[in-house]
Image: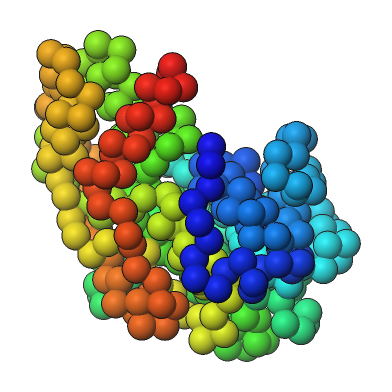
Length: 312
């Protein structure tokens, strides 16, 4: 998959820099590693299994929930910037997910921030989520074990910054989609593949509004946060600022794919505590100089073209 052109100034900024990317084998992580490699960074990619280097990156196998493994990794790489994307991602309202989310998501963040504390100049950018309750929402309860793990991680990040000067920022990312996303538990891959195969996707009511953001735009946001000194100690919404209902998104996918297969709305029960999650992109525009550039229809077309080309 060909990488888009680097954001303005990114190639010069990242050339030769030591960068650590956790969760590098995931959807966003793979795109980020590819882009950093194209910018000339010295990329150290972290995953749970060995992978073949495709863009000149060095691979490390480590579990971020293992404190010793994280400290050893940070000490050996001595990264100038850490992009922390390693995470368990599941929106189910299942009590069995509480401990796995705590262990993988929150413990991993604390291990990483502890390991870089006292390392002068090291910047950390966390992959958060728009599912996190925001301060202006008052007492809104987190909607899932995943959401509360990300919410608590942001709290730890602010503490590490204000108490010990860790240069950390948090990107609260909207609903990411795009080429290369093969997790059929997620809406866009599931619906696109179902329609391409002539199968009826089974959905809930489809009324929930979400902020869809294209993966290349998300990578741009990570690069911007990683090179902006004023990002430290802050959290930024990464999305378009526009809500689109699940039903409208699915109908747009149906139009792009074509064919006679129709989605089955109401086949599934809507999840508890679901609400519209729309970004406020103004702080990211003001401080990071970041704005999304790919509209939903264009992004979905690129995604369907990728699935078609890959023969999924």
